Amino acid sequence: MICSLTFPAEAETFSYSSASLDYSSFSSAIEGFSEDFEGEGKSLDLSFSVRPNLAVIIKYLRASAELDLSGTLAEADITSTSFGLLGHAAMSDTSDFILAVSFINGEAVVDVDGAFFNRVNENGGISMLGVRTMMSDSLELNWFIHKRAIEDRTNMGINLGAAYHFKKSASIDFVYSMDRDKQNFELSLTKYF
Image (tube, rainbow, N blue to C red; front, side, top):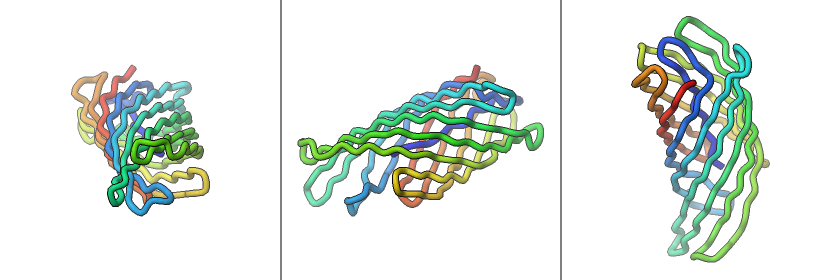
C-alpha cells in the first residue's frame, strides 16, 4: 500500500495544523508478481495540533496501478486511509525532532485483462523518526527513517523532503521515499492554519 507523510511547517515558525493535496507517482512490488506495479495516486493529508508537542495526522489516498506481464495486463484500484499521532520537540529555533506513528487500512481491487481477479485487504502501520529544519525563511528540508509493517511484511526505508514556502501560510512540497518494496515521488500543495 501507499503511505507517505507530509510534515507541515511555516516559514520562521513551525505549524502542525495543515491540509495538503498530494499527487504521487510510484512503483510497488506486489506478492506473486515478478514485475512491479507502477501507478499514480492522489491524496488528502490533514494534520491537527492537539497539544503543544502533539498532532493528529490523517490521510486518505486513491491510486491506480498497472503491470503488463508478457501481454497480460493487471490493473489495481487502491484506496487507503491512515490515522496516527505525530510528536515533535525543538532541537533549535529552526529545527524539530519528529516521531510519528500511523495505522493503515488499505484495499486493492485487481483486474486481469479487464476481468475481476482479486480483492486484497492490507492493514498495518508505519513509524517514522527524523528531523525537519528551515534552511532559510522559505526553504525547509526534512529527512526520516521509516519502518513499514503491512500484514506479514516489514520494511525499513527513508524519506527525503523539501518544501518551498511561497507565502507564510502555504508551501509546495516534494517527498521521495523508498524501501525494499516501493519507491514513491510525491508533490504536494499545503495550506497551514
